Image 1: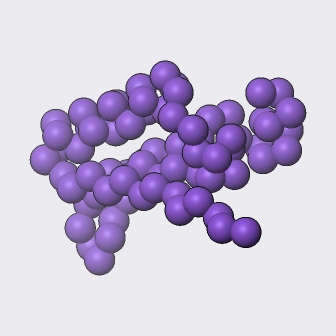
Image 2: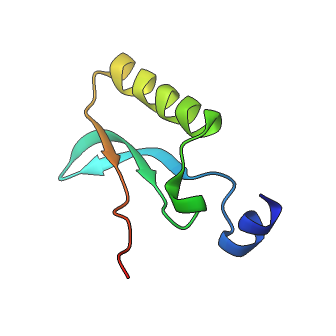
Length: 72
């Protein structure tokens, strides 16, 4: 795990946040395939769950972006 953190600069496979899309407030969770193939462990699940709670409480759309496996 420490090797992956050093290699990618990431601590887990998801980034979450809030922002605007075409002026509409949204909550987003974006999986990063560079971190162990975007594997979903308990930390990733917890972050997605918290982001979903924020979206629900603020009544904002929730966008989840999942990686596509690289072929080759």
